[in-house]
Length: 329
Image 1 (cartoon, one colour):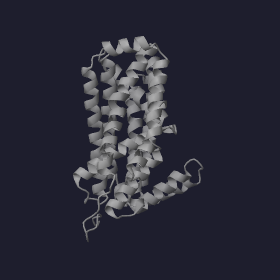
Image 2: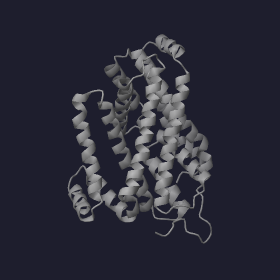
Image 3: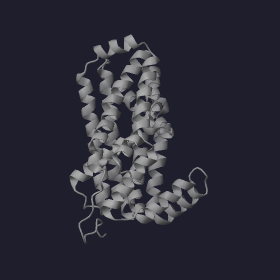
Image 4: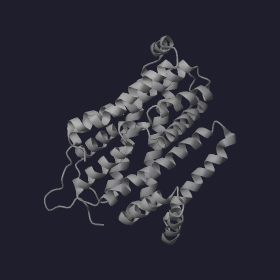
């Protein structure tokens, strides 16, 4: 558990420096003068709209976390402490992703006095739900390119059916057994089995559906933030532009997920700028400026609030004496 403040910021420093390097790289790939000219011509009211949509994104993710904690029986954490924990964990997107997961799991385990495997199951469900949500977002984006729609719809359907298949215990056991025999799925299948055994209530159809609902809405809100940033440069609002915003964000997040860089820094930005250039025919300067404004209004503002709330959640709360942080099922 990271508790020393100076150690906390040392953990974040490499990611923050990387972020500055990414901005410098993006600007160096285009004309600095034109980038600043585009900043001046941008309608900044849309930046405020993007920030507001980012707040909605995080509010929905926080509601999802609270719902999962309640379903898991973890109800003793005060709301203020829960919010401080959520916001502070956002700061660790600038660090190693493993550090973020470790921080969240250990914090909740110490706060509630329950096994880590039960805590891990909450974040595993969140990752599964995120995967489905990103696929759903990509499918919405493909509406602008009908030729590719069946492929993404099939992928989304396959993912949904796999999760529903897990609800049938004998079938789920067989699916996990098969996964453990495949090198690429072995580690994930074992982790999933441990989490299902440690917190089976969370893996039922209703909790998983609610989690998916929250996350889909959260990612749509973030895609809407990108949409309004593009509108701020004078693009005509349309369903096609909204679909492209969904597609660009989904693919950028997927590419960033498979990178080992903290927060997908650099990878996500290059993917965003590249896709905006290819799909919307943007000049490099416009693609770079739109990417910078979008990431500033979403990722970097969230990171800043995470750092500000870090000290508020650095010390885990403890359950009341003689009272378990876990409600009996």
